[in-house]
Length: 369
Ligand SMILES: Cc1ncc(COP(=O)(O)O)c(C=O)c1O
Image (tube, rainbow, N blue to C red; front, side, top):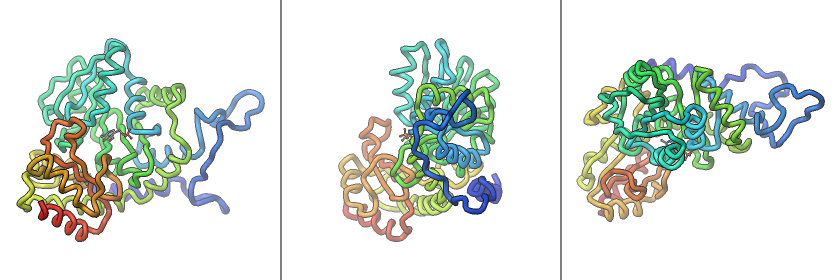
């Protein structure tokens, strides 16, 4: 991937609305309405607000410019994932989900899809390289996986799933449309929890689905309109504003994450560091090929649960919180949610703070262990 193409794409996305007439606002208006003036026979896009709202139309357009694909926005990442499942699957289908990916997607399949006759198998992200895909209607790939940061080759998996007659959905939450281009690599659909880096300010839950194929996206859009999982106008407005600094934030966060991963590796209190940008990462070569930058999440393992909790508690600039991708650094022990990682494993989400104060904070907290 040529970085300058990506820079051009982001510049184009920011200016996708083109030249506006004199007097037009520079930012999308926040439109709060449940209905539109509609005399006579219904006509036009704006008839009832469960179908369309000008503020989320503006955000859909910005996301569409970023993805270079039509987009449907949702009020959370899970609402986006659920819309893909409910829009595209039927009784008798079988799906394949990451065993090591975001756990709520698995709960959705176990609790709500299985009783509807939709079967689900799990596979570790790193094992997708040798997995056989016959019989799967849908394969969901999360790369890098959350939280263990294993990688899958999106191009290779997409080609083999399609050859076996299935569709490939990539959860691109970790990387965002600026950090990884699953549709260009062959995926059928992308889902993204914009709650994380895309919005980036930790003040909104949001999500989107993108696809270049109407046969995949139309049912997802219909699901939104009929089931009513629509984004709120204010949330849409906030995400629109958040995206305007996405490229800046990702650059700072990614540079800091790489520097911190290297320094953490050398600290005596740290047992292991996982980060796709480190040459020691088992899929580093794939990361260089497939991703733009290496993301803002660093996994570090301390001696045990107690050490990890004391470290998180001692940090001044790293907030003890779940979630990631925000401009404030945050950290948590993932074993507290039942993820299959060591008790001392911490998912560190590197934010936009200047690097050196952030490192001094981490170093002091590690030194105190
Ligand atoms: C990879 C991934 N996908 C999806 C989601 C769900 O997003 P949301 O919390 O906005 O529903 C998350 C949330 O953490 C996530 O990490």
